[in-house]
Image (cartoon, rainbow, N blue to C red; front, side, top):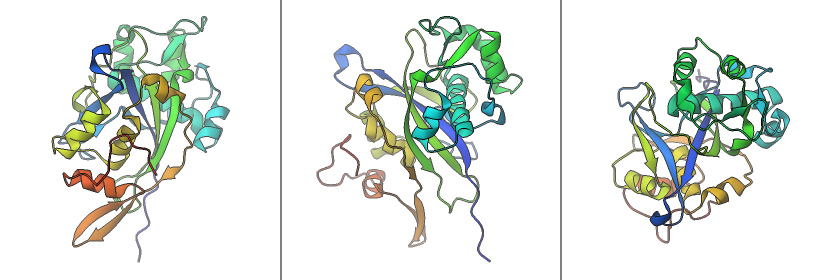
Length: 279
């Protein structure tokens, strides 16, 4: 009897970016975390802040400013309820895992949070689930600033995965002025800013490990400024890699797997330039 694939859980992850220092040349830096190597799921790999959608992320009364859930639903190709939950999860998980808060004053659209460290206790309460994101915003007279996020990609864990699967929506956002990303969470053993090009090279040099979705998103950011990234209008199409057994080993197959596997095997394909347009 053929084993049925697991149902993927909706998830959201955010590529937090900032422009490189003026003296460092053109391009962006992205905030990456290395998961604790002892973790059961994808331990030791480099990831963006993010995680699964919580039931409370589906709250219809969350304080909101920016594109409406219906706009996000159209861009992401999901229903309005799930779109709202994904944006909420993206903001909540980014705050929990990096301390960066996409929020602003409820009574003044010109005022954004510029120091999220004052909400350290609330951040911990969100992590231990004693506080919902909607209640946090309401109590602090804040609104979720959905206009600070942009939709970027959608990847689904291969059907062959037997431990857990995710239907992950990638967002991109610039680091809000005045805020600091810290990576102070229980899942990361280290975190920091790095250029996409450096992160890709570290992977090729066996210094780190990147799963295909992370590798692909880093490649798509390479060579661009924050303004250029935020101006991109992406067509969101679900990408679901396939795991194939080859010579007793599992090989992952997706639209750019030749380049990914070449980097993983510490060699570059002919005529490959990081940041080149994806097929």
